[in-house]
Amino acid sequence: MIVSTVNTKGGVSKTTTSVYLANELALREPNREIMLADLDKQGSATEWADRAQDNGDPFPFRVEVSNVKRLPRLAQQLGPDAALFVDTPPGDSAVIQAAIDVSDFVIVPTQAAGLDLSRVWETLPAITTQTHAVLITSARLGTKLLNDTIATLDSEGISRFDTVVPLREKIRTAYGMRPPHDAAYADVLDEMMKAVK
Image 1 (cartoon, rainbow, N blue to C red):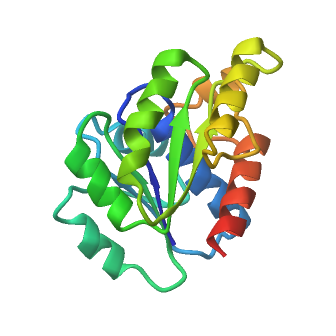
Image 2: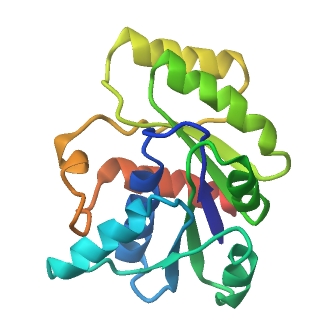
């Protein structure tokens, strides 16, 4: 199973989503081979993993720095039951397309804001045959902005996760440590696994 997290915009929780989903899967299936491929030149996932290791609380999965040319080979090296999560950079259409092309499932995270949502429309045309869904992250629950975002996605027939990841301090302060279990990301993982099957 290969899952890519893509959006042409930065700051929409691509890295956070990749790390948390890989962690939730590791909690659920500790014997499963799980890898996160960091395709972002900023290396946020790699730095997060290194800091967690240095703090004595390492990730329960491998994080590998990768690139467009190496990604297909990396995917082929995994066992049949392995899971590969691919974290992509913003604004690099070649890298985003390469990640989409090897994926079984594509997650497009966005926040409930006009600029963020506009980038979703730019990203979606690149996803042609892969199963995919938009994930609303860092959401202020019960707000008109969130409700309007959901209504806009639904009115356009855009596939989205029923689960919304709320804005929470524990998510924002997890950088540098292994993430704690998170109920929202666990629900996202459940939805994704059902879609992949």
